[in-house]
Length: 212
Image 1 (tube, rainbow, N blue to C red):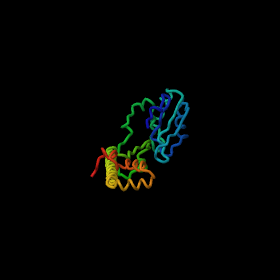
Image 2 (cartoon, rainbow, N blue to C red; image 1 turned 90 degrees about the vertical axis):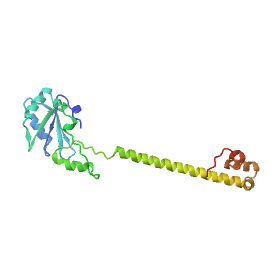
Image 3 (tube, one colour; image 1 turned 120 degrees about the vertical axis):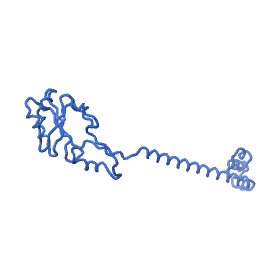
Image 4 (tube, one colour; image 1 turned 180 degrees about the vertical axis):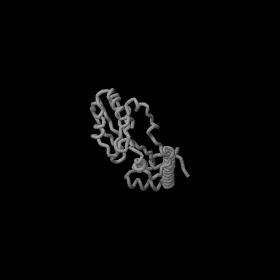
């Protein structure tokens, strides 16, 4: 989660909250500081069940954020020392400050498995678990493409072979088929047209590849 775009100069985030922390408790701590006017306060839940990730507080002016910073310098809630960060402080954060990269995970691990494993160390705001290996996916895709191409080429070859067999059969038995088609269709012209389509005449047979 990128905090900085959400924070203005008169806003702050409060981290390291205990599991039982409530909005009312945080608001009371803020109002204890003289000269601070709380405009908005919300609790943002973490991925851990029942664990707040941080509290967002908006005060009237940027100067009041400095007052809050002083008030929270040694503020505790239960067994947790609270950490208040302003826009300026959050701008110094980098990805590596609050991110762990875990490798060699078991293949059966899911997002919930990681949340359960790491929730004991604090509030989790985001978990990314890539489930795809680009190199393996590309290899599988190429294999599938090759198999499909080979299958299509074989099918095309089988079709051409079958066509060649039919054409050869028609040529060898042209006289028989001509008589049969003439009787069936009722005239010689129609029978001749069908024979041409089947490749049984000289005009259709010319230029036809013969596959053996």
